[in-house]
Length: 77
Image (cartoon, rainbow, N blue to C red; front, side):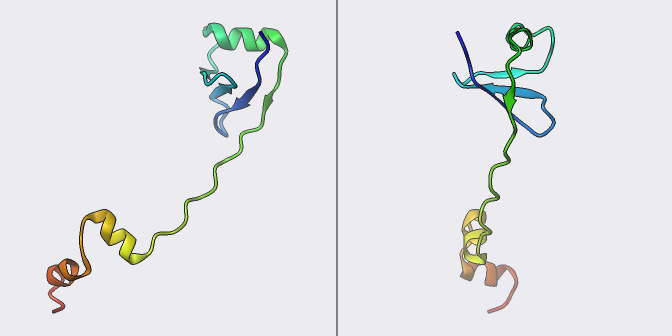
């Protein structure tokens, strides 16, 4: 069977195979040894985009606080 591979990270410590397998770059790993023997190449790693910055309100919500609760904690009433 022929697979398509992509590097899982910039350090090339693992491969992602198109069937969903994550393969560590360990010569003792059977799947990695098969990759090396196949003379296949792996597509370059592409970092995912950075998540959008959270607003102050979203940060408070993630912390489980309301604006009123934060004001109370900071004694800003």
